[in-house]
Amino acid sequence: MRTKNRLQRLIQVRELPLLAFIVLLIIFFSITIKGFMTVQNFAMISRQITTVGIVSIGMTLVLVTGGIDLSVGAILSFAINIGGLLIIRGLPIAITYPFILLLGAIMGTINGLLIVWLKVPAIIVTLGTMNIFRGAIMIITRGKYMTQIPDGYLWIGSGYTPFVIFVILLVIFEFTLRRTRFGRNIVAIGSNEQSALYSGVPVNWFKILVYLLSGIFSALAGIIFIGRSGFIQPQAGIGYEMNSIAAVVIGGTSIYGGSGTIIGTFLGSFLMGLILAGITMLAVNAYWQGVINGLLIILAISFDTLRQMRRE
Image (cartoon, rainbow, N blue to C red; front, side, top):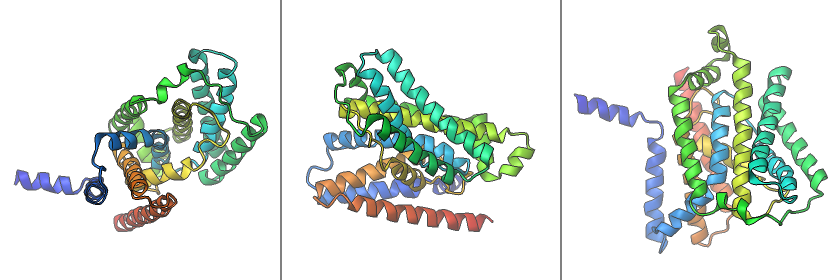
């Protein structure tokens, strides 16, 4: 009887189908691609998924509350380009890194405040701020790259350092979402905002907080982006909003809010990295990744909609 109960609980794990699909995909690529199942290949995948993966952690928190943040890529670009002006002037890491993270926090807070004060859907607000941040940074930088990045800024993007940072954040925020009052409150907001409000949850404060955190995660991903590329470009982060939403939704977070896990987000990010590595090694046009990711998003949202209808 106990074994049967354990089996039933295992079957109910939301991430299990995704994990099974990833295992099948690894087996398929291992059979069809020579040299796919190597340590070097999986090390490359781990490095590829870190920047979007870190942005996706913040996106998970936002989606769980029933919101969305289309400005994450623009925040990344704005924060590192303004921070880059300090870098090329020779300011130390101890000043520039916190400054970049502070910029991310400020822009995330702006999103949260506008959503709370104007009572406008998050998709409209963040679409607007995305264009404002992108336009502002193009005006400030005049579209020019910054290439004089000292070697001291590159360590955070080299080797396994980005992936270690990613894993630490995964553990912290998986625990936070599942085991803390903060996690319970944002789930309650996404499940039924009015009920959460009547229960005494400071809904507006938590909404602002998740967008603030999303901004910080975007800025942190930008710092790692600098370390990996060795230069700063105004176009940095383009497409990160769609890729992070894809990773989060594919990972099982409900687009309607009220449910989601950080582990699922990691699996979604890993799946996208796996697909990119597979189609690259098969010499398939890289644009097929967008097609595949789009199909996976539609499937994930379809299953989520069916789940929502069944629950209702």
